[in-house]
Image 1: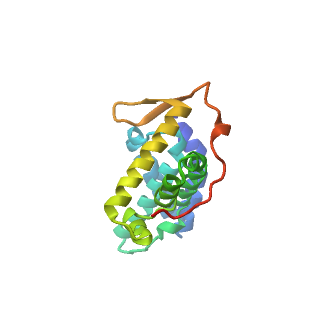
Image 2 (image 1 turned 90 degrees about the vertical axis):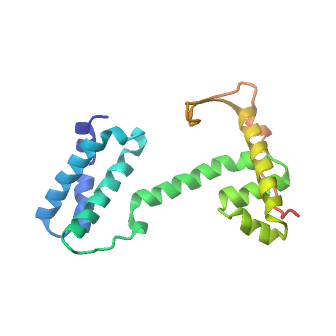
Amino acid sequence: MTIEEIWQEYRSSLNAFLHSKVSNPDDVEDLLQDVLLKTHLAMHSLNKKSSVKAWLFQIAHHTVIDHYRKNGQEKHIQSQQLWYESQQRNIKMELAQCIKPFIQSLPQRSAYLLEEVELEGKTQKQLAQELSISYSTVKSRVQKARTELNDVFHACCDYELDTRGNLTEYHPKADFDARTLKSTRKQSKCK
């Protein structure tokens, strides 16, 4: 995507965002030009086309903060109000729903551990306290469960990784039957 295409698609949304944060229309126009300049200078840092909107609004958010700091007005903008951060949380939740059947296909104890740690966000220390078992035991069991999940993923698809180990492509295996994944499993605490 070129800077012209990006600007044509998102200029009005950025303008509205800036108007919601800054009351002076002249300042908004100046800030919009700052965002354009920063966007142009930072184009090389944009990794994925799908993240253009979030990336632009993050630049706009930081530009507004800089504006208030420069003018001696420390206006605090709540990060919880930013749409791009809440959107990332929603994406994580959606992805968790896709991964859940894979986790639930694991043995019950492994599935429970991964659901608590990976999907619910509990720390392994919290889980160890809840289950009244040692932290090192929980760490070991979670690591084993992650290995089991990795095996399920590799039974499903072949993966291509870049030199840094980041996923770049996947190819579903023809002989994998998604119906073999168990769709429901009772959660039970392990001891």
